[in-house]
Figure 1 (tube, one colour):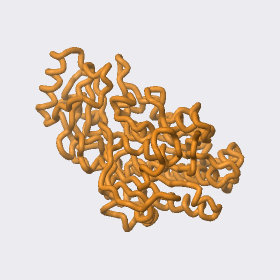
Figure 2 (tube, rainbow, N blue to C red):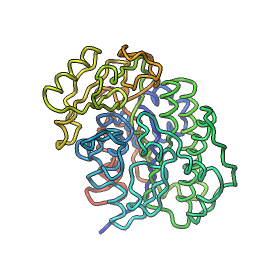
Figure 3 (cartoon, rainbow, N blue to C red):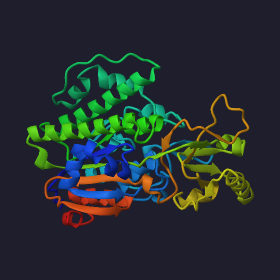
Figure 4 (tube, helix red, strand yellow):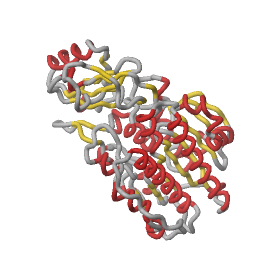
Amino acid sequence: MRTTARKAIVILIDGLSADYFEQHRANLPHLCALASQGLHVQRLRSPVPATSMPGRVSMITGEPSQRHGVFGNHVFDGQSFRCAMPSDIVVPTIAQRARATGLNVASVGYAMVRPEHTDFYYPAWWLRSFMQHSRFAKALNESVVSHLLSSRHSFEEMGVPGGEPEEAASRTADRSLELMRGAACDQRIVRMIAALACSDSPPDLILGEIALPDHIQHLYGFESEAAHWSLSTADLLVGFLLHRLELAGRREDYVVAVTSDHGHSPISTAIYPDVVLGAALWQSEGATLHVAVRDSLHRREVERRLLEVGAEPMDGSHIPAGIRDCIATFAAPDRHSFEQSPNDHDGLTPSGPPAAISSHGLRPGAPADDRFCVFAGPSVIQSEVPDEAAEWFCPTLARMLGLPGGSQEESLA
């Protein structure tokens, strides 16, 4: 019999590293307060590679990349690298498990959850462009953005109180306005989460995401003023959610978990695999590179070329066993990443200035890829844990929800 004593809200802040929190916690007062009140994992390690989709999926499955099937933002289908999708996850997710036991599940802007495993589903505001094979960056999904920013319609769909009507932002190529629209979407996502949690029928599990900080850091840099702004804004959104729960008398109903999918680190040089490898099929995962290889001879030739630019072979243990022989994996040197060469490139120089001046997916175990993580709420005992593996998050959340697989107190002491 299920013994649920708690509900849970999970907020993923994309790109919030353990290092950033420790160095700038004074600028993150709401996260700092949660860390002082709850179970704070100082360094939640990332799966390999430390990129967005593996990081999210490790959180909701409790499995490493080679087991859950999402070994990068892009996976190999035998012919090409394509964007990872929820259908690529080959093990049960926390949403699927929770709903199977009768819990009510909502996914609000959290990528890599199947709609059919939820009672309420709203897509990530950047999801369509990413899923349509945007190889190197997330981008605004115009239909979702317009829906989020135009009216109270999102709230009316839920049957819960909403906010004031807003005019949809006009389409524009201007980067500053696009980023402002992304911030507005993050705000509306958190407002939707708060509205659900404070409604007459609050879900047992809500999964949500604050997406913009990762994009900001890629563009403007780790510890840039823009990064400080985006992460401080994310902290304010967490504070807003907590305040709404307090006002509604729901704060004691929910464990609030805040974490990230990966860290971030400054990048000074981009290696161009299209120049180094010619016609080879490859996919960048930040500072990790996947290359499709035909056989052992081809693998050796790829290794030779990449060693010449300082990249080192990885053992590939994060690749699912069935395709491991088809993929060669490499780690970039310190402060390097892998990118497509720019359009005006001479086609000869193997490296140059990076488009993303901060990135992740570093060599396995790199501290800069470690992420922030905290659980706070009713019956969560205040404690500091130096580090945990990525796979720790899901079973801990499951025990707090009372799902089968262990006593709730195991993860709270």
